[in-house]
Amino acid sequence: MRSPQPGTELDRESREVLQRLGRGEHAAEIAYRMGIDKRRVYWIRSKLRRRFNAKTNEHLIQRACGEGFIYPQ
Image (cartoon, rainbow, N blue to C red; front, side, top):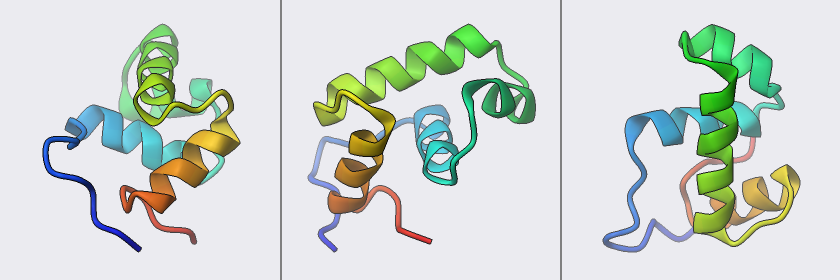
């Protein structure tokens, strides 16, 4: 796996949402576990999809794995 490109780091909150999406958690579950509003999870997911140029969660996870941000389980 390649390591993330310089200057492409994610903030802690985005990274946690991404990791939880990778484990198959839904937005409501992520929001509850992180103690944030569900709308914020949707906003972060939308930001991540733009960052990784992905249209679906599956594509997002695939791209994030490919760039070394998360690892398959």
